[in-house]
Length: 256
Image (cartoon, rainbow, N blue to C red; front, side, top):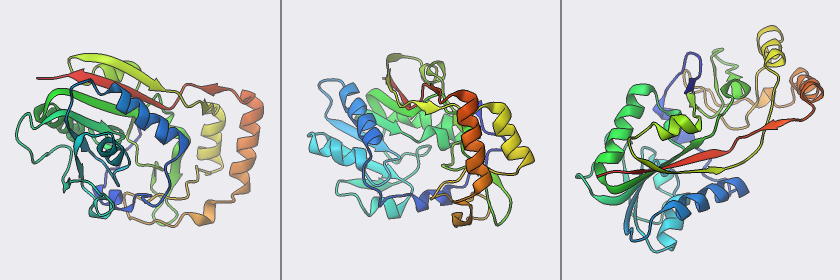
């Protein structure tokens, strides 16, 4: 399991999610993979780290009795299904409250101690299964950005670790299903990436990110950086446009 260098964790940045964006193609594919992985006979589901309820709402529309949990009141205000404010590592439910606990696109944001607590809580509140998705074999270095206000270097989407299939299989004792949503990811030659970041001092650009150290959120000055774009073109020549497996990996675990 690869970790970002000097990972920074600030739960306050979760309040600034891109809740207004429409559901994209790949996100819809990931949601459908999750729904397909839910075993027959399941009735009650908790969606931990539900955000604005994109998956939660789909589950409700498919007839499940679903509860959303998220630390962001802004995100929860957009939900049209039952929900509760809370954190993955401290779920306010009795043991075995749900048939299935789902945690999608959450674990990659959590420091080790909090992730371990979250995994324990998911198993505690689920009677039968836990379903987890995380980004698959992400190259964290490609999406490191640099805060123009304080100089902190951090992952644009707050990811602190990258998961292989083996990492996911080892999260809990009884993994009975692994699935992938394959979204090809462009290769960036590590030598060129090192040169771009360390010599040219050019980092990635993301149109919506928040510095976990100082909470600065305006990165627009970097949007048209010519040197960064030039290096991207050089990288295409070096790698000949090759891609590697990416997307997401899904694990289903028996509990109870």
